[in-house]
Length: 390
Image (cartoon, rainbow, N blue to C red; front, side, top):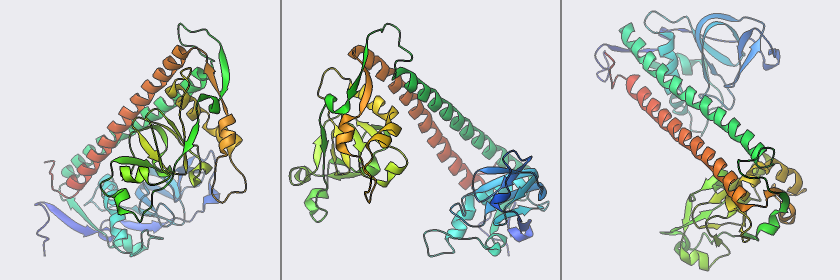
């Protein structure tokens, strides 16, 4: 009986009626650094190998691991694949391999999540793939138009990702040059000096208002910053808001805009040193230390960029040992030195150049996020027939 929810000219079939399903025979240790062929493992990263386990058109997905239901690859050629990677191949004339790739990538995760009561899926069974229903237009030309539209969306996203990566590398190089005086901006030739962060201003910490006090949290207006809010860049607010009563009645502290916020206690310090400069007044908790630039000799934005560039060195020089949670030694942080031009105008010029680069990257990231949202909407509409390309 025809599904009345299907658009005219569309059919719905299980994958086992549209293609064959198999798994690989290789292990991760079989990879070859400079191998001739792609080697698909349980990761978005494609390794290399010298053996051929498949030659043709197919779609691969991880059978277990952290990427279950989220990792998909399209191949049309020679490759090999892991023993816990599923390959869908030998597509029937009813479906385009590229159409299947987009459909499977769009809906498989939701399918497997609907089959478990847990927050994640540990492994994929063959029938989870075989019994999955696929909606598709019977007309191959309509399938091809859908594939072309989604491929164009992918190309836009990939192009933006490459451009952002390039801009980040350019900014990294600029930071290494401008913040060490290897390259001077036009018009500046004055002396530089090493300055301890503690000479720039005092460090202050905060606290957490009582969660039992409803009047501390209900209808809050003051951004309350914890370590989860701080990464790298400019801070415009926080996930949680507190009231003025909480500010007055707890150990939290409000710091004015232009403060430099360091995460000093968090597991994230295993990976990098989060540093931000706040554009609005915020309250901070006990895991944050704020440097309050008091001396007119130092540009807050310059100090921020210098601290970001020194993140790895801060972790090496200031990390406490023997603590349960990774922590920064505040006295060591106060002693930590950054390179500073003595001329504040040069500090401002360097900060402005780096801030402009940050703004350009942020604008590209906003475009990328919008492109991803548009593509998500396209997949939901084109792959279900809500919008027709005929």
